[in-house]
Image (tube, rainbow, N blue to C red; front, side, top):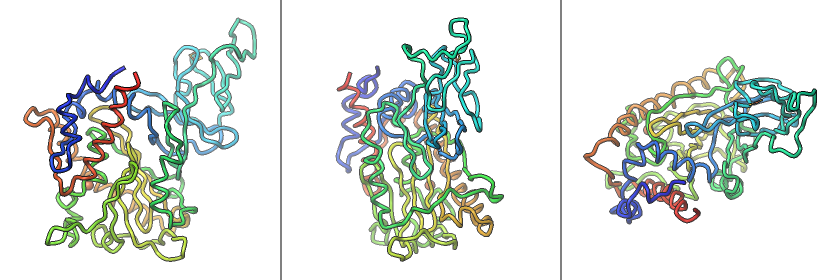
Length: 405
Ligand code: FES
Ligand SMILES: [Fe+2]
């Protein structure tokens, strides 16, 4: 198994651990090396909770949706007969073929395409067809022949997994998110449908940059906002500082949920909020805050007065991160044709423009990581407290690799 000391020197680690005034980003190798990427997959992503997609991709009992995460790990979401979403390693116990080759709907069983073995939707083996040459069913109770289930949890239609199976309970992981919006009534929010109204709209893209750069850019890198996004730059409140250099936003950095919060009036000035019905507050008032937040290590969960935006960032390679984004709205806005135009604008124009503007810059950031001119860039203290905290959280996870093996 890989260890952190194989990749980083004590000096490099000390520069990340340094107080904010002298703090640095992780060195270039952590953004460019395939071997480091594998190290992160086994020591960081596998050990925590990470998002992998959305539950409506396997919406009804018998639906199956195969995916690949972390570059080469095949998983499959399956909706079982009881309506529960399960995630399995997408590999046959028999001979390593994929258990599910492609998206499927309404299955009553999973049938291996290589030798026809059959599993129930809960992953138990129903029949190892012709196992001893005779007609079965052969359930092989003394063999390891069931599909391997992965620990999973669904939160607001977003599917999270803990591959190692021993991370803290999901409720603990999501607690800082739940607590931040504890005064909102989010019991009736639904994923926004396409303009036609026949399926959930998911905005998908590939960002050609390391997952850490993407994570950091989307919420905690407040500094870039007015330079990369011409639309925001035109706003009187961007950059988010007063003329005498005080921040006009609140930094939130709580147990891996980090980003910024400001008033909805400020959000409207910078982004132009939609006029659709707002998310309800428990006390009947209207929300007056807007957050842009990342949940470590790979999910963006941001809440505007009118919507919650959830983006799953799936690392595929050191220089490649998938972006899958959906919007949760008050159910009538999510579904009714009256709001179709507004939904389309929000989903396909507003955030997509910002994403593409960020993606173009992030591609050059990734290219810069290959330059020998700078190996470990410094963090700007005024803006970078959350960036330092993020880098240290990554190091904390990777350092555990030294202790446990
Ligand atoms: S490998 Fe899947 S049935 Fe044999
Ligand atoms: Fe941006």
